[in-house]
Length: 199
Image 1 (cartoon, rainbow, N blue to C red):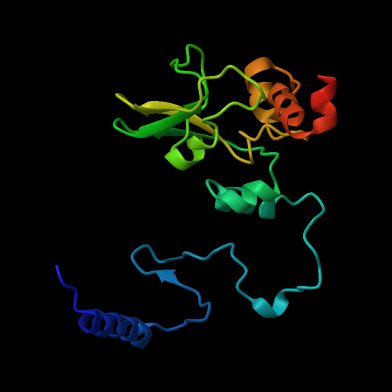
Image 2 (image 1 turned 135 degrees about the vertical axis):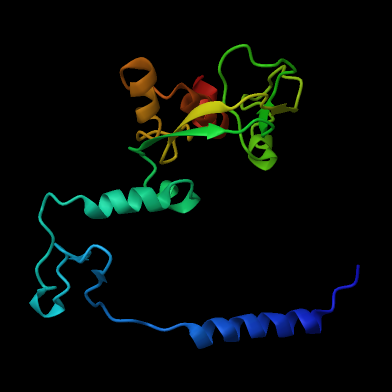
């Protein structure tokens, strides 16, 4: 199928022009609901002359934290910068969704394990972290959901096996206390020669 790039470009420009021609900025005004005869902005201070922007928010205000939490859900960088998450969000995964698991053994996990929603992420774990291991190499499982799965989403880097608390929310929910990050020890032994020699 041939695509006429000139026609697409013309259509794109027309759409942009139409959006710009009909767009406008409207200052804050009081809006009345004429059907019920009441002011729908009651309780909202729209008198900007009375605002003092040099006064900071109250010391115990958490409005900005709530907004930041909601706006950063399912995004990589905000949850990398602040990796100790504090929000739990219930959700569902629809039937037919593909999930992936990378491992160094040819066995399907018999205990609860992690699953990734993209193959590239799971492929990173498709190897062993221990040197001179008898592991068989890379095994990449592709699984498909057969029913709707109920999930609990942890914000932050809740799957990062690193020190400093990214998995604390999960530990408290599952075990009732914060546990030692056991996966961190294996990675450090593999990467650090002094620790590897002492192990």
